[in-house]
Image 1: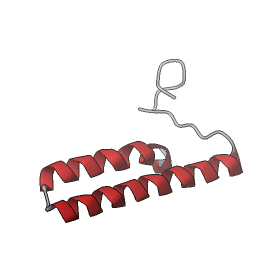
Image 2 (image 1 turned 135 degrees about the vertical axis):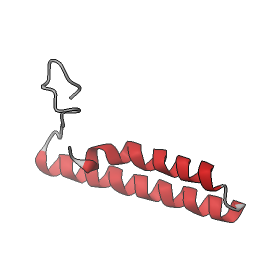
Image 3 (image 1 turned 180 degrees about the vertical axis):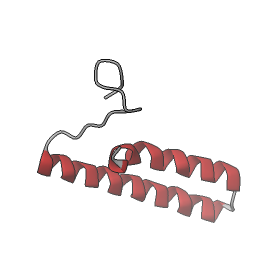
Image 4 (image 1 turned 90 degrees about the vertical axis):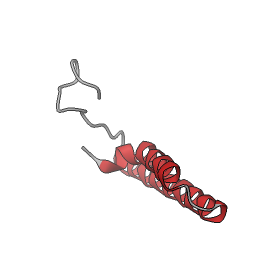
Length: 71
């Protein structure tokens, strides 16, 4: 599985979990949220560049073929 395909979903999820578990000060909270947003934007732009360069990108979740698994 290509990590670039799940990065736009995983980065905000991980950022939210880190912010909930750490409960840092307000200033650190804002910095971590901004860092997560910038990382998410970077991942989305990298994925866009890959799609423009190579065409549609797809992966099989759980190693099941298309009619039975999620593509």
